[in-house]
Each structure stands twice: as structure tokens, then as C-alpha cells.
Image 1 (cartoon, one colour):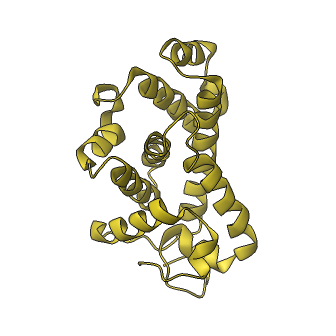
Image 2 (image 1 turned 45 degrees about the horizontal axis):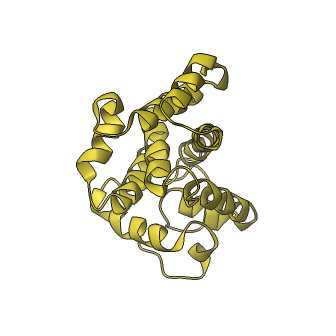
Length: 186
């Protein structure tokens, strides 16, 4: 049960966004800009970064939500998502993505934890400045999103079967405003 009365029974960030549409709109726009962009990183890679940071932050709702969205982009490869969540260094992903996940993990600890060597490693593995930029911004934004969800005690479904229908909808329609105008899976 949320710590504040959000006047709805929507789970996770959705309930908080419905409570505060004036902040929901820019947050949805930010999520779309960061996670739906196809320049550089793929939407799957972007969702894996969001999943990884949310897992490190122990935000159950967010790491399962974004893990399921990544799963859709990865043709249902839940094993890969779980490998990235638990031990990305041994997951069958590119060295570039591994180096970006390392940067994301350091941002999760604190921005100053990222070193010149981390960035140079990402570049050596093929990351562009835009991909490094987007990784840092995704990681920073997800620290905010995770703290928003957990800091207000948002309703968090523990039934993992509730996450795939919403993930499909986000993969197809994006994040944000449609939450108020279209039927949403719980």
C-alpha cells in the first residue's frame, strides 16, 4: 500500500503518475526519449540498462517491468534478461554493452564513481559518445524513477505474470500520456 493516498489501485509508477499528471507528462517524455530512441543503442539495450540499474537499486517493480519490456525486444529471451540482471559480465552480450553496463552500475553508486578508464573502455569496445551519454542519463533517470516508486511505497505486484501484458503495451505504444486515455493491464 502506498505511503500516500494516490486514489487509485494502479501498480508501481503508474499509480504515482495517475496521482500527479503534471509530473507524469515530463517523466513519460523523458522515459520515451531515453528508452524508445533507436539512434546508437537499441531499445532492447536501453531496457537492459534500465533493468540492470533498477535491479542494483532493488526496485522490484522497475526491474521486473523493464526486464519484461527488454524480453519483448529480445523475442522472449528471458534467460538473457536474467543473466544481465544477475551477472552481465558472463552474459552473451557484446563487450560494448558490458562496458556500458559497468558505467551504468557506477552511476547507480554515484556519478563520480565513473572514471576516465570506464569511458575509454567503452569507447575501445565500440561505444560512441552518444551511447555513453545515453547510458549515463538512463542510469541517472532510473535512480530517480526507482526512488520515486520505492520512496512512496508504490503498489508492487509480486505475481510476475502481471508484468508481460503491460510490457507489451509499452513496447508498442511507449511511455506516458496514454496511461490516462487507454485501458491498461494491471
